[in-house]
Image (cartoon, rainbow, N blue to C red; front, side):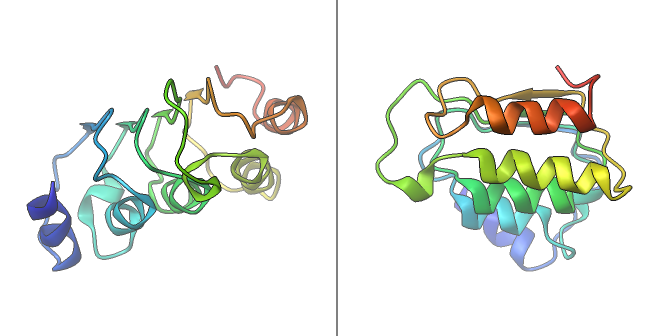
Length: 137
């Protein structure tokens, strides 16, 4: 994983990367998500499915992916294990960011979002997203 992150940060291309399954990988953090979704990463242009369930990611990483990976169709940030701290949790902040992105005409290809087990996701956040993207599952 460190090699992959270093390669992304140095501008290596992953032009054909469509699916990235990193579930339960404790080295996956917000910094990693920011690296793969940044402008220098070509995989941000092609990534369609990202599974980071039970990884150490929070709102900053999720919002970076939502902003930078325009072709993303599936995102799994669900959690079965308790997070170590608040920065490793996804909250309504990410959902409200997604709802606002869609509301202002931002292109959103996201079809499936899993936030199961995220203790800081509430009905308010889910309702906001579903009001803007009713086809989201």
